[in-house]
Image 1: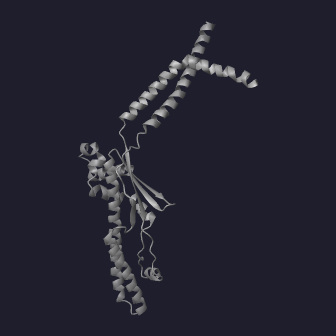
Image 2: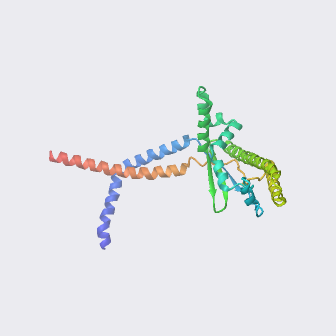
Image 3: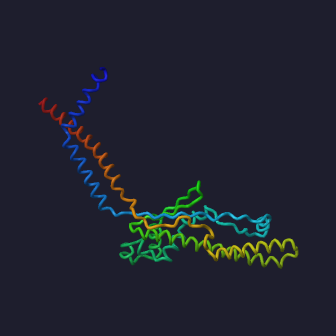
Length: 280
């Protein structure tokens, strides 16, 4: 009984309040929902393609090889780490190679590429790098030891191409860099053979040379050299933006609160005006 006596009048007040101001609330909600629907329909759909790659399995360097390599001032050949792969995927040097090799300036800059012919090549490259940075997203899943490479574009096929271009260029860059380092170290080790007479040291140097030769051969093959593609990108069939249902729901809830606030404000203003007219 206590609950009913205390709260039913308040409930009746709110019912009366909504009844009196329902027209204002409905108009505000309807306008907001219609605007959100029209806006979502006019927005350009955005699609996302995704690929999953995993670093190549670690290889053990024979005991003593790493110590000898350090003594000779070179690094023993080791597979690429996850950190190196992620840093390269996020690097401007890789993005620039992807842009130049695949002629992506017109694609990434659009009208800006056509309208600003007087811009220097350097400025356009930087604009394209920033555009590509906004399209690409690199995410490392430490628990599964995988790297997700995703690309967003209003063209679903272009999103897939961007990922394929990036992964291909990453393979090219890492394999060419590994070949360069291995060839440099191999030449240096060969020069050290004539500088030592110790047969044990020579045997170790020959082993190091063999490792670098193997590294060069693996880099030449390229396939699964530094990483392997677990899940290649596919052309997406559904957009990720705009989420029309979410936009409409948010607009509905926000406008409902806005309508209630406007109704309270209107009632307050009317009350103040009535009080002033009563005093007069």
